[in-house]
Length: 93
Length: 152
Image (tube, rainbow over the protein chains, first blue to last red):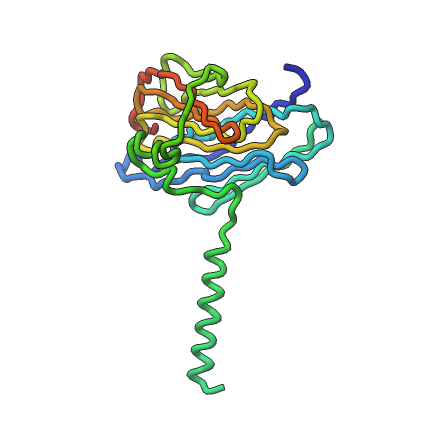
């Protein structure tokens, strides 16, 4: 398929599901995972995702924009179950 | 203003301010707790889709390893040439929280996604796609060599 733009995203996050124990202390590690994740193209949401604790640590995603859109602005945002959030912006070249 | 009334007023104003802060939690996609709750696959699946008919399809292509060495990181690729797919659900049948992800997108994106999921043990990975009002399903069996801790 030609003419698409591939977007690769690596979100650094422990993605703890709340069922793992600390290997040293044996204490249950509290759930801590990204719950909401969106991609915006020029400020408009083009993808919105809800995630659970079954996604791997440091989620790595690939999606494809149908067209090559030079100069357009991509924004990625996430929020986790503890209210932490992050975002990143990129202009397609 | 009598002192007591003033204190009451002050207290209410503070309570309102605190509530405002607590409730102003940002929302991006929204998150439906009951869909992602623990429970067995059949129950959760039925809770989400009810009695709606779901058609099995080959038009949604699922790429997963036949044997996954490490259940903590299982790569999955979903792709399809079908038009008007607005939503995808990724389920891992034997995980304590069977729904891994729910994704929604508009027509500017192709139906193509790679991700990495956790698998507690060998089971089916089930992907349900919503095309208009129709629900389509593709699934694949994955043998997991090492699951358990750090997964599911």
